[in-house]
Each structure stands twice: as C-alpha cells, then as structure tokens.
Image (cartoon, rainbow, N blue to C red; front, side, top):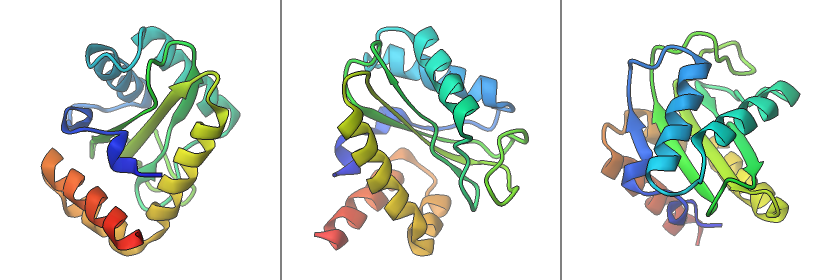
Length: 154
C-alpha cells in the first residue's frame, strides 16, 4: 500500500491553534470536505468520534491514527495534521498527540481500511520514520519522507 497516493500536500496541515480533539476532528472533516474527499464534514467528524469511543486511536511517541469508514467518503484518503497544543488527545504512553494521520475510507471498503491502517502502523513503528516526520516543517517535506520510505521498502 502506497501511503503517498492517498495523501497530497493540500491534506498536510500544520496548525498550532488546534487545542482539542474536537477541534482537530472538525479541522480534518472540514479539510476533507473542502478538498472533495468526503461529501459531509459533519458525518466524518461523527464517524471519527464513534471510532474513538470504541478504541482510542492515540498510539505512542506523539502520534495518533484516527480512522473511520463512512458512506460520506468519496475516496480513501489520509490527512496529516501537526499541532503541538492538543493536550486531551493522548497516546498509549500518556504523551499528547501532536502528529495525526487521519484515515477515511468508504463504508464498503473494509479491506482497504485495514490495509491502509496496517501500512501506516508498520511505518510508525520505525523510530527513524517518526523522527523524519517530526523534523519535517512543510507539506512537501512530509511528502518527501513518505515517498522515500516507499522507495526504501520496494
């Protein structure tokens, strides 16, 4: 699964004004709607919260992978958000989430959902990959990290 094909620079966001999980999910939903990846920001926000209630999606080292399936999704998509001010969204290690890779897929795409989640999770296990993501300061740098990682895997 090539992560870089599910994300674009317009879906890579840096915003330290985001201070809560609610505002993070709203930001993601609105971005996905304005970029025509989903039909309804409201439905995506609801789907992300529903999934979060089942099992929290914060992992470790400041990373989170909120994800949802919804009929409102037009195409499988990843949206990245970096915000260092969120204090209520915590990882398994108790560390606040500052780096979020949100995954949304159509409701009938269960296999794609698991494949994308698995591919991204495998990359986030690598401390070097996490370090490169943390050090990236622009959308183009994030895209370069993702593409270089894919080349290394091939």
